[in-house]
Length: 304
Image 1: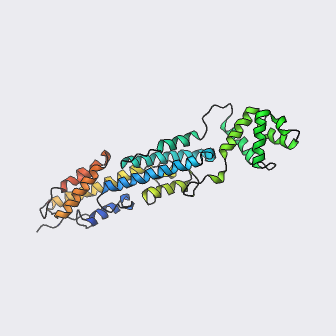
Image 2: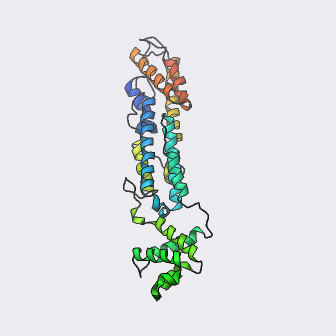
Image 3: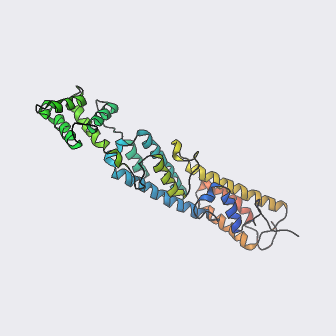
């Protein structure tokens, strides 16, 4: 007598426990609501959370717009790549990731792209001298440099040798234009302690990016696919998980056909639903639809 089709883990093919088992054998099983056969729903929910994460980054960048220069360039580049990777996840599930280009523009423009006769390092060093002054408060130092940039060092110092020395140390013989640009760099530098995002972590830090990953995926991402190395591969991670699931389904169905096993009507319906949902996923995931198709003709206790 023919037996009911079972998978490699002993679960009945097409049953809820079958899909739960094969999903949990891959990264896919770590995702919220990923214990069944509704792959389209999981991707749509991922897309929604990816869109929310991108919007959260945009809001953080807008709130700290004047101080983004204080974020190390390496952090900004890594965060820009993470935003792009989140956009790819959004696209997989039919999302829009509408703020992604705005985020990337803010991160790429925060290093300053306007013409200057001076190097970024020169201006950053001068800005730090303004910020780290032991002689004057931040308000006094900023006002002094602003006056010197407009009217010259001697006028701003007004006979005070301490003020004159302070301004000369910043200016280094480069003139009033340099003081003006140094003051602008100082304002962009802002307060380094005030660069946290809504998550509480410093924008662009590893902790900040890990928090975004947990918000979207509901779990930790394997380091080789995550943002740690500056090249997150979220779409690849999801694609590989779905490919592995499809491969397991195909192997189980082929084994059932070889052995003349049967599938119950309700389990065939589950497979049909899995086919329908995976068909709504973008073209790169059509392999699930193809590999499930073999099971969809099975009804009742008819043999495969």
